[in-house]
Length: 101
Image (cartoon, rainbow, N blue to C red):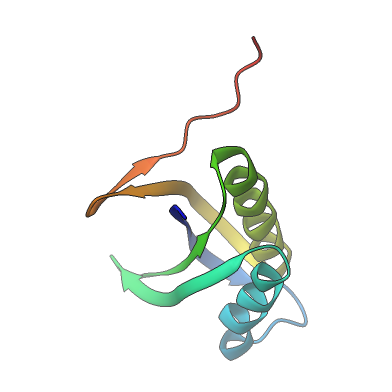
């Protein structure tokens, strides 16, 4: 099953969100949609960045789950730099947007 990940830079937390709860809340939400493989918060250039890696059957289902996870993160904090990528071998590539025929 393919591996996907979403990443977002985290800014100010929304009222009612505490820093220690941000990642666990996002991962708990993600687990309602997909199988979560890993998660992480790291500091990149002085900013927090959240990563949630998960499995999905195909790009369309991964896209729906990924944007839902990012939407949940956006409810918890101001985010930017949103990314949705798929793993091929040992590299990550952007998931192409849906295109109408």
